[in-house]
Image (cartoon, rainbow, N blue to C red):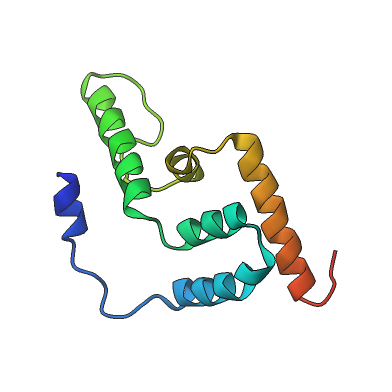
Amino acid sequence: MELEEAFEVAPRDQIDPFISRMKTRANELSPFLSEDARKFLMVLVEPSEEVMEYAWRDYCRKRKLLSQGLTVRGGKKFRIRIRHIRGALHMSRRRIRELVREIRSAYRKSKGGKK
């Protein structure tokens, strides 16, 4: 399956309520976050085409290794993982950890001062 074919998959008629709540919550937190944290959160909620392409290339690479008889972890299903977002945004693991901490902190503060 080519990447273009993957984009042609029929969208769901109804938006998943969980995704809808995540988008709403991300929009509420956005004003309290740095530019990088905001970008990371928005891509996490709704992956960009660049992230999907990065994940697709990784999936295809793993499928090729599987076809060669090699043992590969996670090559049977197409999934977008944090490492794909990190790679597409050109951020280090350390930077992603900092952004996650920032997002958690903003979330806790918005929930009424919990630690």
